[in-house]
Image (cartoon, rainbow over all chains, first blue to last red; front, side, top):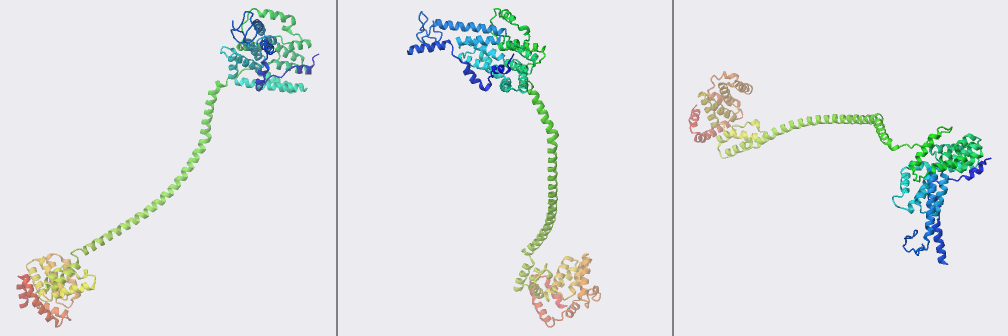
Amino acid sequence: MINFDEEIRKLKPVYEVDEAEDAIYANDLKDVTDILVEMVKEIKEK
Amino acid sequence: MNCLYCGSPAVDETGHCHECGLNQRILYKAYNTSNYYYNLGLDRAKIRDLSGAIEVLKLSLKYNKRNTNARNLLGLVYYDMGEWVLALSQWVISTNYDSNKKNAANKYIKQLQANSIKLDSNSRMANTYNRALLLAASGAEDLPFIQLRRILKTNPHFVKGFLMLGLIHIKMEEYGKAGKCFRRVLKIDRFNPTAIRLLKEMDLPEEDYDEDDIEDIYQAEIGGDTEKLDIGELLENSKQDEEDDSEDGIKFRGFKEVNFAKYALVYVIVGIVLGIATMTFLVMPSRVNSVRAEYSDIKLTFSDEIAKKNASISDSQAKLESANQQVEKLKKQLEEATEADGSNSIYDKLFDANELLASEKVKDAILKLEDVEIDELTSEGAKKLYRSVMDAGKGDIYDTFMADGQKALEDSDITSAIRYLTLASKIDDTKAKPLFFLAKAYETDGNATKANEIRDYIDEHFPDSKYANGGVAAGDGEDAEDADEDSDNRDQEDGGAGDETDEADGEGDAEAGDADGGAEDNEGEDNED
């Protein structure tokens, strides 16, 4: 049976226009290249 | 070969970049994987598997966050699901990594920014949805339901909104309506896992979206077409979905943007017409009335002032006329005074006569006063002086003038007769004889009025004289002795002085005879008489 409260909790608020900046920072994640660069940097530092 | 990451040419045969230290093979593999997931996401997006597309596109970006194609497509998918802010954020990041004008994200952002009304509407929608979500979480039903219905009318592709509305329907035990909401979600996002799961739990038929069909549809629609989707195409698909919805019980009207710019000219014209009408029927009449009232007041004021001025002008004219008359009068007086003060004034003549008298030129002195009447003299001193001059002529000079006058009268030389007789009457105004003959001279001259005046004067002042009453007693009046007798009668004061005068006259005659020449004969005759 569907649990209404549980289902509602699964729904996330949407970004409002005022929060566009936050959304931009949240979506600019690290990719594989960033991870590789960090690894090389760590290796070089060692 | 340049490095895929830093662009440096320092890449050796093993694919190692000496600049950034990254292995090109690994980078190539990562970028290739990213593109693979992008293609997968594109395919899913084409069959409206938006949730699946989001999943693989995010995976694509994890391999290469600079994959602008994947990012732009992710933004489009968000946009179609009604999450504009997420879409915008993806496009902004995309333009940040690739500022080339060919980047489609630029176009999408411009389109969003150009439609500020819709952007504002979407912002309000997000806000309303978040509040409705809080209310629903707190157990409320009605208010979130109303709010969701309202925002879904304006944004019929808002997947999260339909999901929440379906849940509220479930809570309200309206399973049929809940099912329609979830099916609506599936029309936007064909394989939305939440919608599919909830439909399954409600034991409702999924109709076109049975689990078995999902894979078939997915395979059938992938085809080999890998063209990009754009907003126009997605919106076109959305419109098609709205038309399909009309067949369901729930009516979700598509958001039709009102083009206010189209009506701007109409609004302006209507505004102008209303303004003119207001001016014509409301403002102008009151204004005209006030102007008329002001005009009437001004007219009254000026009428009063004009009346006052007219009265003042009338007074001034009257004063002017009076002044002019006074001026004329004064001018006349001045002229008279000027004449009186002239070289021929009576006083000058009087003074001249006095001087002549002092130099014993009696006759000349008398002739000087020929034109002067004693009444014209105002001062008593002048009158005395006049009289003294005339008195000096009594005797011989008087007789001479009388004789000359009578002779001239006989010779019909009336002008000379009048002159001499007038002089004689002035010298001795106590005798009526010269007046009598003077009247006769005027009568002969045809001036009966003057003659009568003189006779009246004789009758009044010499009533006992024989020359009175027209000189009837005197006859022709040529008797000198009678005249002398008459003179004696009138001049009582003369007495013995008359003899002295006669003597003086004798001396005067001698002088006058010297002066007049021919007059001596007459005087001589008079003396003999």
